[in-house]
Length: 206
Ligand code: GRF
Image (tube, rainbow, N blue to C red; front, side, top):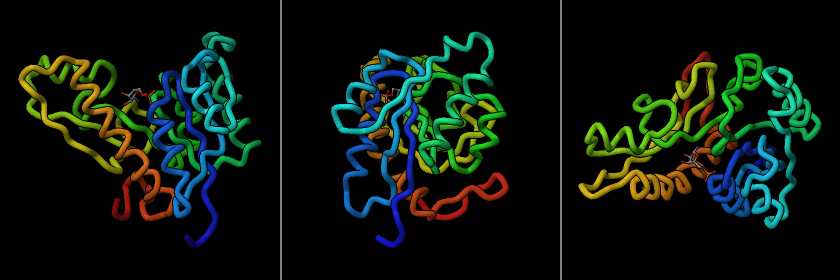
């Protein structure tokens, strides 16, 4: 693998299954990224214990300590990312909406995974909404983060069938399995520089 591994921070709020998929992929000798930090806004997030068990560096910055001042919260995150010389941010089940202040500082260097085939079903409860619409297919999207929620340029998508007897839970499980495959592959492409964001457009091949 030419060049060194890009230093990635994974931001989580919950169980961190996507973070674990990235961490496991990054064990490969030819993976162009290392998970240098796992950061959560939720002190008791289950993903933090999993990250520590993996031997990964972890940190907690509790958004509740900053009250309504979202930017103050984000300045703390940004300061820690700079101290840790982070080059790429991967949001993975991170449930805080970042303000334009933070997003613009990390334009082209921050990605997210969303459990729908964007632009369909931005926001939350994507599986229940797809079922309510009687969608025949669903899936997940990795995209660059822009200030508008779940609206950034798409890096990669994976599709799953919706089955007649699906519940939100069974559909979510089928999508999550695809997330755990798609996210490590998408991060590999971005970290290797094979996919970049130039003037709002995704260049390169996933
Ligand atoms: C997943 O559905 C993911 O798409 C969304 O958050 C959910 C939980 O992710 N971003 P994780 O298990 O915490 O990685």
